[in-house]
Image 1: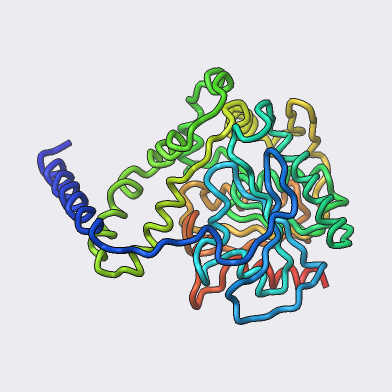
Image 2: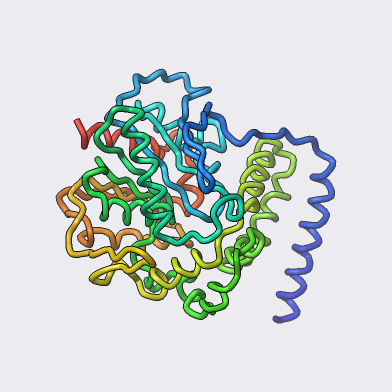
Amino acid sequence: MSDVLLKSFLTECKEIAGGFERLNSKHLKSHKDSFCTRDVVKDEPDYCLYLYQSAYSKKKKHLNKNKTVLIIYSLINRATIVDLQRNKSLVGDLLDTGCKVFLLDWKEFGSGTNNLSLSDYSFQFIDECVDFIKYATNNSDVNLIGLCQGGVFSLLYALKNKNKVRSLALMSTPIDFKTEKDTMSKILEHINLDLLYSVPYVSGSMLNSFFSMLAPYSVLQKKYLTLIAKQDDLEFVEKFMLMENWRMDSPRVSGPVLAEFIHIFYHSNAFYNEFIEFKSIKLKLDTKIDVPVLNLYGAKDRLVPPDASTALSGMVVKRSLYDEVRFDCGHIGMYTMGGKEKTPGQVIGLWLGEELF
C-alpha cells in the first residue's frame, strides 16, 4: 500500500471513530421486529409459520384465497427483513395487493433437530407448511415466494411437488453458480468441505465476516463514512442502524447443511445437471415446471449477479410461463424499496392477479 493510500485510509478511520463517539451521544428510537401484525400458526422445533395482517396500511384490500402466498427465506440472516421498515415492507406490499401472507421462518440451528440435511429444508419442512396452509385456507395449492437461498429451496420444492404449487416467484435467487462476476462462487471453490462437514455449526459472526470480505471497502468503511457525514439526519441514522442491526444479527447455521449446499450448488452447479442428488432424495431435472414463474433480480446485486438469476429462463421452467423483472438496486435494496418506486412486493401482487384470474 502506498504512503498516500495509507494516509487516506488512516484519515478515514479517524473520521469514523470520531463520528461514532458523537453518535453515541444521540438518542435514537428503538424499532420492533415487525410492523405488520403476525401470529404463529404453526410452531415446530426447526421453524415457525407466521400469518400476517396489516397493522399500518391505509389500503384495505379484500384478501383473495387464490392469492395465498408462502414466503420462504434463506438460512442466512433473519427473515425480519421482509417487514422491517414502515412503508418499505415486502409483506405490507403483498397485503396491500390482496394477498394472504404466510412466512416460513427458520429457527436458529441448535434450537431443534441437530442432524438435519438440505432435503429437510427444501422438501420436508416446506411440504409440512404447504399442507397446513392448504387445509387452513381450503386451497388446493399455494403460491410460493422464494428469497435468495430460499428461492433455491422453493424451486427445488416446485420441481418435486408440481401439483401443490400454483405459481412461483423468486427474488435475488441464484440459478447459475458459476457466472463470471460471482465473487462468492470463486471464494467458495477453495473451501474445505470436509472441515465444514465436521463442525456442528457456523456462527453468525463468522458468516458476517465472510460476506464482508466480498466487498471489504464498501461494507466496512465507505458506508460508515456516509453515516458520519449524515449523522445530524436522525431519520437516516435510525434507518441505517436498523439495517446494520439486522445485518449483524445472523443466526447459527448447521455446518453439514451449509457444506451440502456449497457442494451441490457452488461446486457442482446443480441446475445444469441431469439430476440433483441429496442424502435421501434424487431429483431428476428432465421435466419443467408448468406453472407461472416470476423472476425478480437487482441489476446491482453483488451477492447474486444478474446473470446468475436470469439463467433460469428456459432451464427448468417453460418460457411461455416465465416472466422476469429487473430492479435498479442491489441485493438488500430488493427488500427496502419504497416511495414512488414500484416495489417487488407490488409487482408480485399484481402479477398474481394477472396470471391467476
